[in-house]
Image (tube, rainbow, N blue to C red; front, side, top):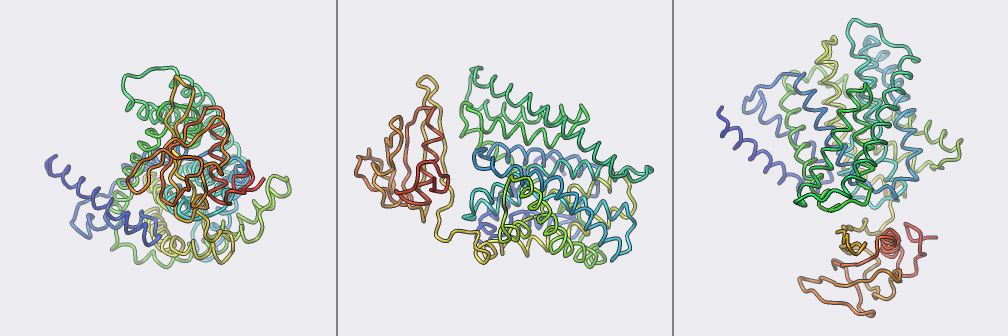
Length: 501
């Protein structure tokens, strides 16, 4: 086909995918399923577009995952996930190991697979998907600590799983022993973390001091820095995924010019990457060849969801409690077990052994595809119900405030844009009752299309948009105070992220 036809087809697919996001949002389904459906429709079983190159899928998929991880890091607020990091790191290391072993033992015992194939399947399925987790959990009124664990875990666990899958997919070499796995993974993770630790702060320092001629260049520069981290770490034989996520996390929480524009640009780029990635994976899959792999896939998926994931959560909860780093009760453990969503990451990882020529790798790819579709359909829409039943969701609590900031560099101040969501206890609070620091003030309110300057006795309403001017030094304190009042009302304590001292 000519280039103009490809451009037209690509644009139509993107527009249809964007429209489908609304359907996914209403139903609670991760949008990845609809994007995969577009790929099926365009593929050999639909319009007949041929695509069967796992090597290209692997390379494109890894690049798209790097971009999705970069967006995850840039849009993650460090103060929200800081206390969750020990548990998330345990789930991304010990939890991954437990999940691999349990799935491999079950697949080898129940399906008679050889050990290499069983271990590869366990490793491929061990990683939760950042895009799937973010798209579902950011709509749930969960405690900050619990959502922080799941978000941080999905950002951290891609790196070790990629390392394990690559090691296991080396055809002609024996399966590495445990010591070799640990040493190789530790070295790659250390290099990736070191690259991020150097490049992230250096990039933030440079961006604060370089006056670029156009504001639109700052978001491009930030994303480019994250990919410099990815490529640099890979060239140094380190973990590119850990490097890109940590670099993005550092840059996303640094005081940079045009942060709101950067986040918006990154979100748009990540959505485009997700659409392209899932459509491509749908094209690569062959529905006519999948029936033979449905039963093995369902068996492996059931073991993963009902046995491997819960055991990995229990082991990690015990470890962090023993180390006095966190205390996760049984309700939270149950929710963490059910909320380990799989998405594009396992499917992309399944292309690695396929491209490397591992025996029966195409069947493994089909099994992973079945697992992702079936169990995402099962878990995604039921997460709100499970959260309510387990009592980990606070009924009636507003979702997190949408706060954007525009730096006023010469004044050393920030302009915060705050939207009051439905259910927020900011509704009915008078401006003076916010008790903001003396160096901050609500300067403007936009209500039902009308803009006015509030007084101290102006009552806030749901769907109001506030403009708050604050000095840079107390901006974080202002955000904490607004979130506390939103969740616990005007009598909330000053410093509690959830309205408690």
